Length: 307
Image (cartoon, rainbow, N blue to C red; front, top):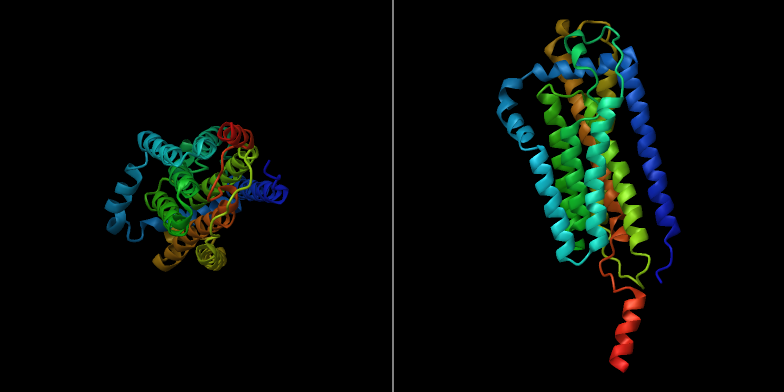
């Protein structure tokens, strides 16, 4: 029997709890307080600066993310795992994609956004947190990392983080979502990645010894450093926006609006980088490079050969 990786399971549970705590804090501040709503509004208003130049690519990116594309991507993820003869991995990856997207849609309906007189133009739309499009992109990216061979995970992690970040920023550029919506979606995906990891570890417990693949240390460090730098830039932009928070957004200069928008975009990209870095840091232990048949099955095969 494979020894229980208690430390790994505890780490995944703690990480999931931390991501959910961050989600709750973001939801409370940016949805339920006037201060948070104002910061989101200024960043969202900043998307008008140069919007005409990126409108075409942004629409193309967002229009490719639909229920149909999600179903196709989920099927591809499951197929990759199955051709590698990893049934538990296929189920875990599908659990991640389905769980994250269902959770996002439920939360979008459940979370109440009070009207605090901040963004009257969008008041009738109600709550928009978390972002469904960002959830689709991030969940598919993480699921692909889980099912890819070990030698491809590093590149897949970097490209996945870029894809999730671009999708999140695209929702901001199109005016569909506020920065906090996309960040919240990324945290939901991160928590579900931990849940899927725990499931995969438990499902593989009946196997014997396993062989672990490479740890992708370079990609993990690159994503972590990039994520922290981007979040630091987001913090600076927030502080600069704080200086003019009492001024109506339509009266702010282009530079101030662009600064707020850039801060929101850096917050989204930085969160994507850290979430994918955490996934890459543990995936080689969650998904071993070589999984032998279950101990009982191996014993039967040996007995048959001996007989």
